Length: 148
Image (cartoon, helix red, strand yellow):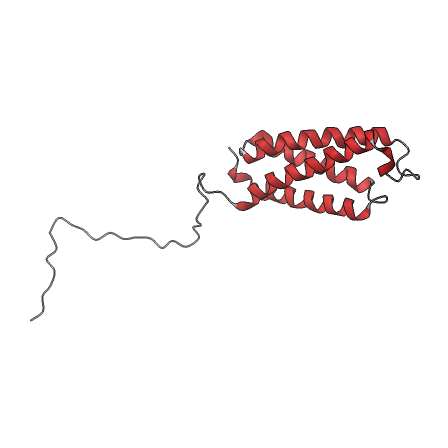
């Protein structure tokens, strides 16, 4: 004896199209680690730049002034200002604000440029900050959908 399920007469079969070419998109509530990592690293890079600028202004003997740093006070102010702005912007990045993202992109690029010019005097330190800024730029540019 085979039993068949009784289907009501008012029910009609539904045709479901195939889901080819559709992709799942991240919901606004989902967060990727890259943006959080970029925000934290942005704060670290800002602190490095801030204290590097402070040292250039207060403790000039920390720097090799042979040729590259003829205007050490100007470099110190540039690092100090960029670093302070980076620390403030890091909070906006962690808060996922759009202005924080764009300010972060501009400041990370400026930081890379400043350290590129200083790489002759401190190659390892300069490469470390440039690499850090490159990862920050990736996190801010590649995952822009997370920002309000």
